[in-house]
Length: 480
Image 1 (cartoon, one colour):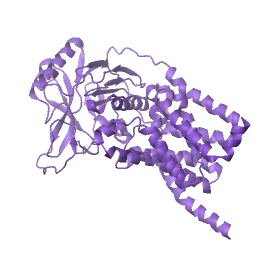
Image 2 (tube, one colour; image 1 turned 30 degrees about the horizontal axis):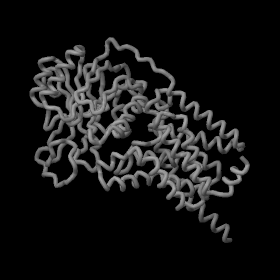
Image 3 (cartoon, rainbow, N blue to C red; image 1 turned 180 degrees about the horizontal axis):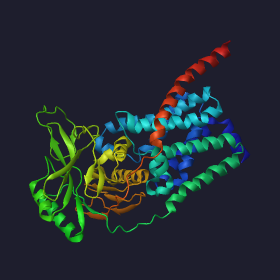
Image 4 (cartoon, helix red, strand yellow; image 1 turned 60 degrees about the vertical axis):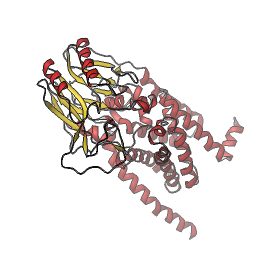
């Protein structure tokens, strides 16, 4: 044991390689449901930031990001071809720059200051990566490892960004206060056990006798007659359904009259995705791939439309954040809640659910549930569908409200207000239906990280800028 310890101290390459491997293994195990490894990942990550060379720290961060992300994002290659490798580098940049800046900060700040500065830096960069720059991408952040856990994981209090920040603060404080390596290891392992416990805490699924039933049906390439038949079948199976629900891009240029007539005949509601052309707008000069089978040559809104029991449009909401690199419509000019007969419902389309700035706005307005029409194209593969399926349980846990997500080829989900997936469709599951009574008893609330992030961004920016002043002061003192 003493020889290994000596080797770690005298051979930085071996030490950093060991932590590199530990970080990669812990990240993947966390995403497999072993959230015991969640704090171990961050512990290893903190050790990597202790590299003396900032350029080497950046390069190590890039290599680490490839080992973390490429396995989960192989579907990028089938979607974007050679451009996927550029996207891997852009995604990896954020982890690499965190490790590099942390290495730099360690040169100028005291150990006590670093206890909070490095976690704040990680918190800030993760939020920027997910929410604040052009190529927003929130998948594969560590907090999503808790998607399979219950509300007790802390997502409802700290949020998906805050839970990583909390973990980093705990480990930083532990490292600072506990000098004995064995005691430090025991402390981190104890915390790791606490991170695993939420996976074993059952949430009761209470019967909702008086709440509205919603029935979703998966269709990507079905004919209109097949879809109409599936509505009849769903009505026969779930006769108390108040709202039927299709996916994003189910139709083009509005809801066909035959479906409006069906709603009027059955005195019920239908939510479906469609497009709405923006009249008097110039034609698009774009070679972007279309998610819909009919390429749109004029600007359009990617729209979710609700048809009422009289066969008329009672609500519609456009997609706020169309997918980059796709002909996915024009961003919605505004967001509003549907004041349904049962309560206030927020509707956002597909990847809008991945962006907290979009879903937070619906919760701020008083949303009591979220409905998410989604198109995950079948040829993107089951791995992509499962990875996307982590978002809905996370949002339900964060806000404390149910989320009902219907996807074109799976994996559709009904998630209760505790983040528990109660109903799930299959992949590709054409014509699959899922039905649940949805609780609208209270409005959602935003977790703490949404309020802490902007002070964190300010402190991180100021600390980074001030680090150069400290560096030149130290250099001047050394030379003097």
